[in-house]
Every structure is written in structure tokens, then in C-alpha cells.
Length: 312
Image (cartoon, rainbow, N blue to C red; front, side, top):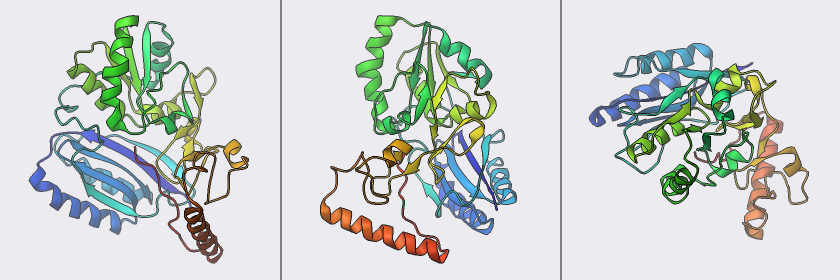
């Protein structure tokens, strides 16, 4: 049986005093609808990815669209052969995507939205500076041809990279446009708000993110290279949002390509080329026991929470 996966976000001013009651309501609704995944609530809006029966997903989105400023809340849909998440989390946060810059207000000002069908023409222009706003381990799975990788390990590092690297680069190259992108649109949208606040101009971002691009733009002629990392048990997707070839290392949580899984350092659930030097023998013994329990649970047809997804 397949389940529907929905990724969504919306920037809007929310009453902090009302958030705990909304959190409880959404948790009850999602549990009753047999949904799993994560919904984040903050003063700046809502962000989430859930999976489950299509009627339940629709019911949750309809409730969110009743909130002030979210009537036009969009979602990106795909299918998974089974539940894409182990549990349901509805959390209150300071930010729905953590940049650490509370004065940035995407609900008030963001860059220019670029539809997927117009994206390739923009980034093909040599006068456009193309920036991937995701983390380095995501970029390693796939990115747009010619995009700059900031090499960040978390979104909190992005403002510092802008000041130390992007600002001098823009002064040197004097691009006509800056084009930024991320998985679903939320990080690049907040990034454009930050750049505008910091005095940059001609800032653009991919509307709907990589996921919408892969869904709507045919692979022949596309400037996308590789696969797209996603924060659920599918790990990666390709054009048309088909399941990709990556899996997770259950020791360090990083994505593994088929080549990684063929490496001498790879032991399922225990180690991989990315983390072989990070953990002690005692850690690996513990991971091996966890992997044994996971395999036993699989044989019994039971769920076992054995993987930790990296945070965006």
C-alpha cells in the first residue's frame, strides 16, 4: 500500500500565545488521520513534511489553510511504498527553519520567485551567480550544474558564509542576478530575505524548490545533476520524484551512494566511509547490536526506529 508524502511551508505572522493550543490541535488531528512526520510551528509560520493516507493529508492541509496568511499554502506531493517516517512530531520552535537571525522577516520581503520552467534559462546565464543554500552532505548527492556550494553543515552557518565569501565574490564578479535554491523552497526563500536585508539586490529563488523542479521539468536538457536528498526514509529522489539510489548510514545519519555501500569501510548499520574514523570500537559494537535488533524486527514484520535523519 502506498502512502502520500506532503511537504509544505508558509511564512506568516502567528500569535505566540496561540501556538500551544494549535500544537495540541494539530497533533490530535494528525494522530487521528494516521499521519507521521514533522510539523514545526513558530511565530514566523509553519513548516512540515508528513506521510500517510491521502484523506488525512488533505484534512491537515485544509486546517492549516484556515490560519491567517496561509490560505494559499502550497504542498509538494509524492508517493512512497510505505510510511516515510517512524513517528509524528508537532513542535514549537523559535524559527521554522533555523538561521539564527530573528530580524529576518520572509513574510514581509523576499526575493523574486522563479518558476521551474524559467529556472534553467536564468542559471544558464553567465551573469547569474547560482548558490545552493543547502548543507554540504545534501549538495554531495546532487545539485544544479555550476552552482556554488557554501560547504555549510547547518543553515545557521549561511549568514557567516554570506559575509565572508559571498559579499566579496559579488563585489568581484558583479553578477546581474543571484539565484538561490534549496530542497523545498523554505531555506532559499529565507536566504533571499536575509540578502535583501543585508543590501544585496537582484536576488532570485527557485519557486517550490528542487522538488517542484524535478516534478515539472523533464530530465532531457535539465541542468540538474545527480539526485535530491530528502529528509525522510526515502533518502533521495530523482526526476518525477522517483525513489533514488541512496540509503542512510545508521551510524552517522549521512546519505550513502551505491559506491559508498561497496566501500571496504561500509558495514550496514555500523560504519561507512564518512564515519569510519569518527567512532570508537565500543560505539561500533553498540551500533552492531542495534543493527541486529533492527534485522530481527524486520524478520518479525515489526517497525524498528534505527535511523536518525540529519537536520536541515
